[in-house]
Image (cartoon, rainbow, N blue to C red):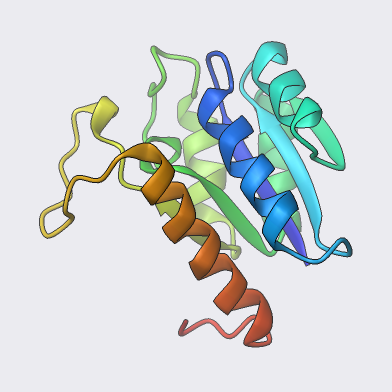
Length: 143
């Protein structure tokens, strides 16, 4: 299974996701760090991603080539992350057939009704649990 972790700015959220995924998932699971900038990509690579790529072209190219995409819900929104996430990046992620397991972080001005605010470490733990269920369940689309 290939998992893409998408992040921008300093890559802090992506770094934390990558650390948890590396610790919780089997070593054969490939983690691909996709950063909107080099700093984000480097942070995720240092956290244990197998490979990394940076920028719009890298995200557009790789989004349909992974099984799961993780990050904050902002990666689906054009011009999120202070404009680093381009409309083309958001479209490529949204259009990808990959399962999207996203954190409901409200920095993009979007509120998801029914989601209880949680600290980031709890959200990342929940994301990793969902990804493990997806992985162990044979990549079923209804998980």
